[in-house]
Length: 92
Image: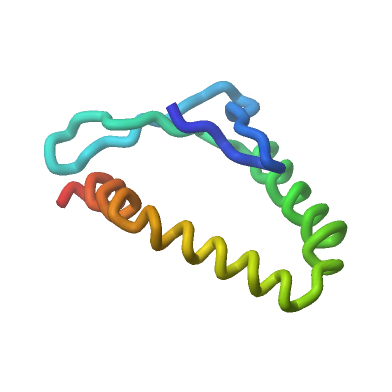
């Protein structure tokens, strides 16, 4: 089961409800996600805003660039895994 990731913390939805992710190619569930609600979204937006105001804006442009490059490298490092997940989610 996948959890929400908010403010560097893995959290269940506040409602406690979940949603099965179905592989369209065979109709079988392959994962479970949190069924987030408005309260979860508000929490995530508030946490993102706090980070933006308290941390991101205070970083030098070069440091922000380094962090974005590191994020890009991590995405590329996991490209095959991400592609496989997307493929399964689309049923291809």
